[in-house]
Amino acid sequence: MDNRLFFPATQRNRDCIGDVLSKIIKKGSVLEIGSGSGEHGVFFQKRFPAIIWQTSDPDLVHRKSISSWIKYEDLTEKMPQPLEIDVEKIPWKIPLELANSLHGIVSINMIHVAEWSCTVALFRESGKLLNKGQFLILYGPFKICNKHTSESDYFFDNSLKMQNDLWGIKNLEEVCDESKKNGFFQEDIINMPANNFSVIYRKVS
Image 1 (cartoon, helix red, strand yellow):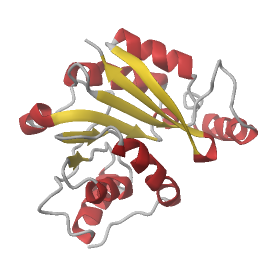
Image 2: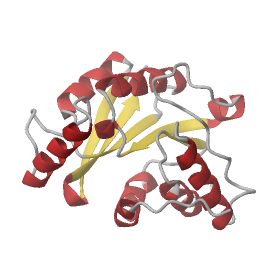
Image 3: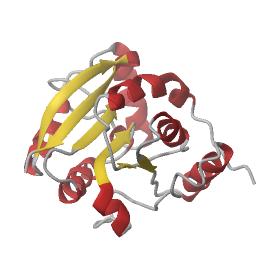
Image 4: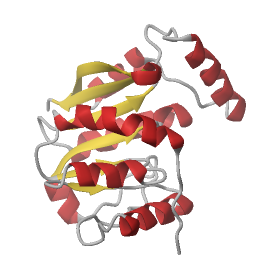
């Protein structure tokens, strides 16, 4: 059965995100938190064949879509099936093999469609799983100095809060503060198309 989902944003941003990843990914496994449809996962697995891209999502419909994409792209022998990870249910249940080969963690367009507690949990668990020098990358919109970087982000933020008043675009400085609590420093922030950013955090302890 074909359970593939199609998220239009993936087609627009996967190449530019891949360009950022290409400068950082070197070996081992990458864990993606909140993989959604799975379109990013299979694209990055094909672009970076030397690594193992491990997807995850708490939603069964999304995990079925990811599995369908893995099969559709003929990656069944290379790419593991998605893990059921709810970022707030800690500790995350991940295979020992993944824990031993983990090189970095990526989360794309997740924290603004989640409560702040999810951001806290993301850094807390990532800080436990990653070793010194390894990376955590966040992609999506951010406020800078508590101000939106565009008018479209202002309206987008309001639309998110109408769906759930605990959702919304996060303030970059607050996210950075949370990273420091868990042994990370903000290595780089990269301007991306459509008023998004790729923020690279590196484990220092």
